[in-house]
Image 1 (cartoon, helix red, strand yellow):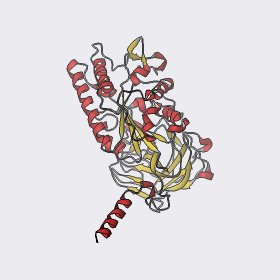
Image 2 (cartoon, rainbow, N blue to C red; image 1 turned 60 degrees about the horizontal axis):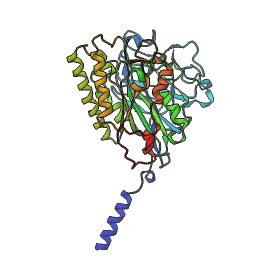
Image 3 (cartoon, one colour; image 1 turned 90 degrees about the horizontal axis):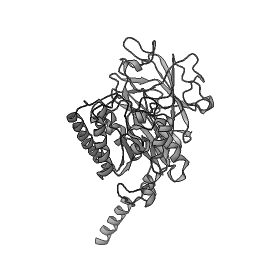
Image 4 (cartoon, rainbow, N blue to C red; image 1 turned 180 degrees about the vertical axis):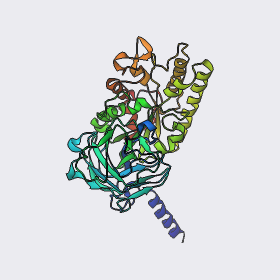
Length: 441
């Protein structure tokens, strides 16, 4: 009897210790692999100025009887995909009556035409339409649709009733052109006479089924990460340029670079979009396949707090405490967090003559560099500051407002992210300490 019990125990233990890749996967998919996002967009409540023009915005509804075509830019490749649609900020249910995916004409971003040979329908539990409840999101059924690394993908949707209020979920800082026409034209090769704006609506993610060694890096940021100062339809934000660098290196090509940033975003208080503390669960912790995060925030908290000694000491202390909370919550999900120093804003409206805001920036940056709380530090401040005036950006990187950068400045940020930060993907037991240069290990 004891031998039987022991044998049963050993059998149970053996089943428990089976590698994840040997367990059953989703129906119709290989058991070896998992879902990882190859593109994401931080959902936001659309401001009035960022709603589409009439007639797509009416007195009390948006996108009634409308077709919307949008392009997104992938990070890692995959042969099977699914799309996430979000109604996070809608206060009425949103029905998508038809949705399709295709490659854009010429493979370009921000175009109204698709390659019709690649056009495929998206289904939702086998149905062509889906209704997304208030505050929710849905995921389409997986389909075979090969997506190349760093390529563009077109998503077209038709909604008959649209959003029956003006509270619409979008991402205004897309830096990518979207198109819309009246009526159901989801299968049209081109949307002739379409209106256009540089915003995304309802889209929040493109996921690929990929091998277990592939994982996501999510960047939590503000307009500096969202790409203000970058080139519309060229995907030259610093996360895009980091992605180019990582995908070109075989040792890091399995890392998806995912941009969860929004212009005006703050850590402590809502701005353009919810504060980081409030959005962390949705935009980082609930994302699929994530192994790393970069936290590059805080300048808007400092810049919007009063320019007094008391107010700036307070915001610096609150930022430091918030960063520690973010680290704790991410570590609970086995996500490593890399802290990025806050870049200079000398000459911008955020700078004050008394220097209290610059002192707060220095206080927070010193803590990021020396506290040992982050799993590693990325010194963006050092990468882009003017050696002759460290409180300001290097002029060659300044887009002109002394806060945001041009594509060359964003390249400098991308280049400051050392590929050694991701070595533990190949060597998971390697535990190098904060502050050490991974190139010297």
